[in-house]
Length: 124
Length: 270
Image (cartoon, rainbow over the protein chains, first blue to last red):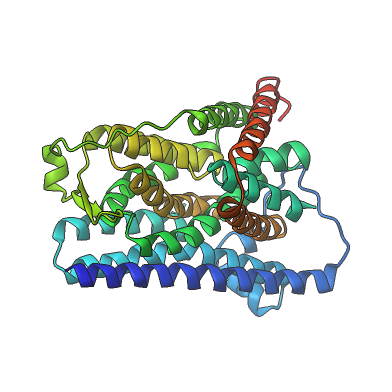
């Protein structure tokens, strides 16, 4: 049990580190793509307009990525970053299921469900 | 410009122990004139990045308690969804006012001397049923501990989640308060488990903010990279320098920022 516990903690540590690194790299590449095309344009964030529809959903972001848009690639990096703690919860769920801890399988499933509702969006 | 501001926020966050998120929103809104909704979105992203990066290191040391963290995450994620939902309907002035108050209180919490409350009293029944007893490493070998007042701690965690979703912060100070003071967990266990939970809590509201169009890639990217770099630099400074004076200076900065947020929030200039 203890050895298993330690292995799970090591796996979680690795997952978090890799997730953050990959997400930050993807976002940085998108930033370079954006700078290469738009360079010195200065953006203004003083007035709130909200993002265009394509940057508000997973499907829209993927379309932007395949169209080679820098902002879409940055947003993909940010989505990967948001997905990192969610993947951590999923990994913990597997670990609790493996040791047969039913109470914590239920608790972890609740957390995972709440996170997925947020990430995938509630159909309105 | 935004990146260097974010670097400063990450540095201040690490040195005061408040986390980068709570400094980034006032910095972006007051110093850079960014609308608070964009600032909150960018801040949430930076909170996920720093807490996941730090948690990767802590979880290996064996201090953070995954069971306690997961149980309390049901409260913080539900609270975060509620807070992010509410954020769409309240005025930016109201958000700034609440932000100023929370920032002020957090600064107070970091300055207050920390007294040891962890005791050897038996855990309550709920804690036993939920398997919340564990041990953490000390120089003299593993030391057992157990959670108490689980229901009260759980309620406070829900509030921490609401604040996180409403203000785009990690709510680390409130989380530590719930675990360390209310549930009487060892301080090191509280801080590392709190850090572990922050990423999940922030991810719960970040999704909502993304769908609402509050997360701008052009702003969130430099903020995320800047806060990450600042947090890393801050962690390095912490291990090398005498930090007490430095800490006082930065807590002073945080107090000034919170007063400015309060002023702007109340006068409706936010």
